[in-house]
Amino acid sequence: MLNTIDDLTSRLESRQKELEAMRHVISATPVILGGALIIPAGLISQRKGQSNWSADAVARARIERVAMQAVIDAELALGHDVTDVSAQKCGWDITSQPKAIDAKLPMSRHIEVKGRAKGQSTITVTRNEIIYALNQQDKFILAVVIVDGEACEGPYYVRKSFSQEPDWAVTSINLDLNELITNSKNL
Image: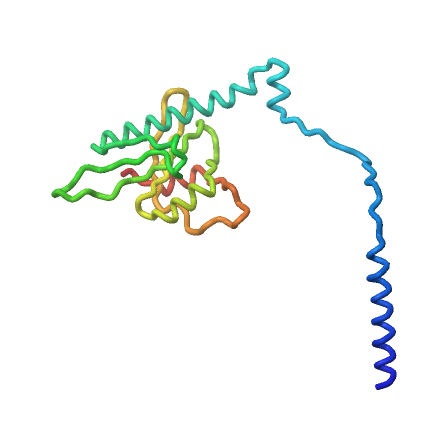
């Protein structure tokens, strides 16, 4: 027992000396060994006067416009009242309200529109869109439209397209376009 007390006392004194020495540590001036400057390729193209930087944004806007119009036209053809809510960033693009049946108003439809250029294989959905789809269950519809110039295929309506919430650090996921179309239904 005496050896244990001496051993513990020795260890305590040693640790106290270490802690006291740590109190007197002085930080030195950092030495920079290198650096990096990251410039987006699109910005470089824009500064060189190349139009491919903005053409992608213009093409995406056109595809989105054609896809939105295709879904709006399809919903109007069903006799629904349609409201474009895409600018409100509420988790879906179109609210479609079916007409009343026997003086009873059916549930509104919250439609997220995904337009893709013909030949593409995936679409991207955000975490926010997935969360809204899970929370709204039967109200939420994912509408996929394949755009080829000003013509389009679809819309293909996919209900219950998500089964679980994405992990906490996931910002978006890619879905297989052919699988979505295979599992779609005409509404």
